[in-house]
Structures are given as structure tokens and as C-alpha cells.
Image 1: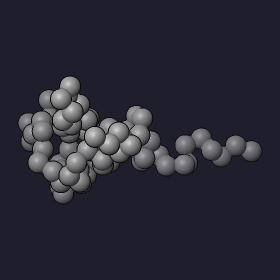
Image 2: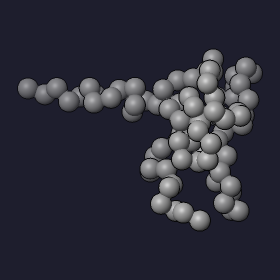
Image 3: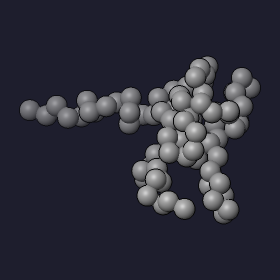
Length: 84
């Protein structure tokens, strides 16, 4: 219906995929899966090797033992910007 609300390129969190994703919106293990019918699912990639987690968590995720921030968000603007 509205293609203007699609996530930015390279973003794996579920910020605009329906219900608020909570921690998953900023997690490096979150991946959005899009079906041909237009449904979007948030999948936890870490769940494939971490038995504590579920593959498709109920949203919003408010606490998670496997949560890790996305590398680009964790680094912020301090990554290599101090040249003299």
C-alpha cells in the first residue's frame, strides 16, 4: 500500500515493519523477511545457534539475552573521523 514507509537501505531492524520492534530495531541479529504477498516478518538470526532465543519473536521485544547493537550505531560518529 504505502511504499514510502519502507526501511532505509541496509537497515535490518523492524522500526517500520508494523508493530514496534523494541530492542530488535537496533539489534545486529535482526533481519526483516519480506514475502511475495507483502507480509514482513522480523527474524532473529542469532536464534539459529542460541537456544535461549526464538526465531520469530513476539514484538515488541523489551528484554533479550542475545541483544547486541548494530555495529554502525554502536560506533557512532567516532569511527576514524579524527584526522590531523
